[in-house]
Length: 338
Image: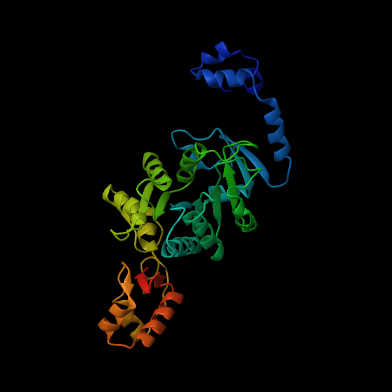
């Protein structure tokens, strides 16, 4: 557009003339014979309230995203564009997390949202959804980056979650035009936008072969911070995070570990439990049981032997700890610390 003087002049050129600008043959062919019907569908979508298309030179285009090596030439946005200019942290992880992992993601997202940080993720099942919901529950903003056109919701079961994101002042974002379906190749491509919008990426539970690790590595390539929550060496869902930490990602136990890297003031020092952000002072007998609950599965019999309390008392205290988000119950009468 700069070389030709504008879009109208670009579309007057044939493919060989376009190729002289260094474009790939497929791009030159696409510009020489545009999909005008597709463009009309996009324009019809843009005519609706709250629907936007930001070119890279638009003042509303997110400045951090403009800095990455391959920023999208345009962004389709559904919702409030101003959310894209707010300080953001990406929170990503497994689509099949443990209950504790999902609670942890929601807890981190909520605590960060209360500090004015917008939570950005991919609207996927699992950690993504937990992060979006955690931010919303805290009254904060959240942004979802889609791997489809914004005329559809994927997965469809998250339609109400998308509505909550939009009604909460957040936004849906995609580089894909109207009608683009959820294809496997789209999601690694959209991950660079998740990390590119954000000052850092937090990974909560990820297997070694995980799309979340793609997002983390893209964040590194974009010179952004990468954070990871460590986990048990016995958990397959912790191996991706533990690998990131070995490779130099910052180990995260509380949100202060994130805030200090982002240059945000740390939280007041209070009693916190493994990043959950909870500050409740537990009664002495609850603490006595809690200190014997391992991060690996721990049986009630083990806790009875360690504390000297009856099974009934231990079970009652475990229920309280579970309600407070300190432990998670597992099958077979086992518990694990969060």
